[in-house]
Amino acid sequence: MVLPDALLDERSLSKLKWRCRRGLLENDLFIQRFFHRFEAKLTVKQAQGLNVLMDLSDSDLLDLHLGRKTLVQVDPSLVQEDVREVLSMLREPSERSI
Image 1 (cartoon, rainbow, N blue to C red):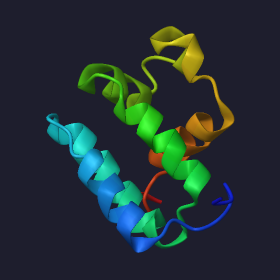
Image 2 (cartoon, rainbow, N blue to C red):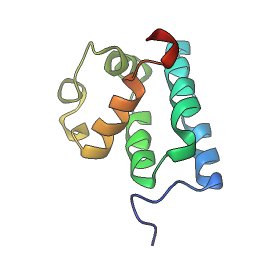
Image 3 (cartoon, helix red, strand yellow):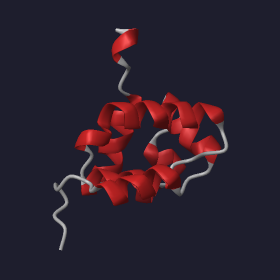
Image 4 (cartoon, helix red, strand yellow):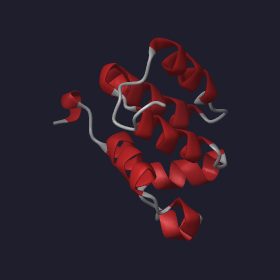
């Protein structure tokens, strides 16, 4: 059994990156930045939250990234701790923009 706070292993990380490929460039850019910043310390729980977000349409995912919609507006079942945490991480500004 893998603990939720355990770091994601290399094989799982590779599968997650493949799963996160999107059709909309803007989403890909957000996700690339996310992996660039967090892949070395990504936990199993955070990966689960990211997988939930990857089930969304590109337009809903982009609306969440940009804050045009909330999790409740997109799908009330998304209001989960792991999903909120990953969405917050996705929205964090990069160091260059500070």
